[in-house]
Structures are given as structure tokens and as C-alpha cells.
Length: 216
Image (cartoon, rainbow, N blue to C red; front, top):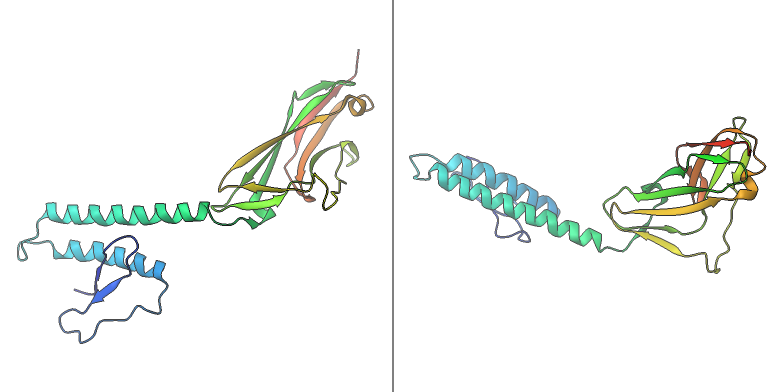
């Protein structure tokens, strides 16, 4: 019939029992414990299913109960693992942070302010930490010229703005900046691209559009 694994709980190590015609039990000590658990769960499911039958007196209802128990045990192990990951020490991983940007309102009259909203999202299943500075935006014309915001900001280590920014697994944070009236006043009427960026200009969002209208 093959190997049968005995699972005691979500934290139990797998123990293999030798079957008929097998002299010794196979050794799993060289396999990582998480892999042993997965092997135990899968093997148990198939073993219980194969045992069902009139010859051994194990009916369909018993099989269902056994498989339900194995499923709940596996689910508990996954949930416990997720809890451990969410409380783990954060890693510095800028690549895990996805950046998006929007402009509110998307049309602005020259000489008036508008809001540039950045959303930063941790895309992985463990805590991540990045620098809280620089995080900003820039507004770009059709020829690539910068007409608002900036992509050349630097933060001094030890200053109050140099702080770690921590994200829990899959957490999002929103930051709002103002495109100042003094900048929109000098921009020719037209449509422009807006980018949000984090820590380095290369780590930026896709473009959002903003339309500047001439003042009356």
C-alpha cells in the first residue's frame, strides 16, 4: 500500500511506520521539518482513503471524518505560520513596495494647488522596512522636462525626517503632497504626467495625468 505517515498535531514531526514486507522504517531526519509535515499530511490523506473498504470495516463516513481532521490540522499549521511571519523582524526590501499615484483634482487652474496622493503597498507576506525619506513626486512635460515637484531630493542621516517606515504584510500606506500654487502658476496650459517615487527616482509609479488650465 505504500508508506503511512502518523500526524499527531500541527507541530508534530512526521513518523513513518514500516509496512508489510518492509524491514525498516524510512528516515526523514534529513528533510526539513516543514517538508516532513507536508509529506505527512499528503500521505495520511491517501492512506486513509486507501484503507476504506468492506474488508477492513472502515466506511465512507469514517474516511470523511479522518480527512476532515487532516484538513483542519493542515489549515491550523498554515495559520500559525502566517502569524509567525507577521510578527517577524522586518527586512529592508524596497523592491517589495509597489507605488501608485493619483492627482486630486485631475484638472487644476494655473495658480491653484492640487493634491498628489501616493499609495505605497507591501507586496509580500512578511514585514518590510524602508526609509521614510525621500518620498515625493514630480510633474513631467511631454519633452521630459520637470515642471513641478522634484526627483532630486536627499535626506540627511540623523535628521528628523530620516526615519524607518515599516509595512506589515500586504499593508498599504497613503501619503499626500501638494503641488504648490507657485509652481502651477508658471506651467503652460496642457496635460502633464505625474510620478510618485520612493527612496530613489528609479523606484517610481506609472504616470498619472493632470491637466493645467490657463487662469482666467
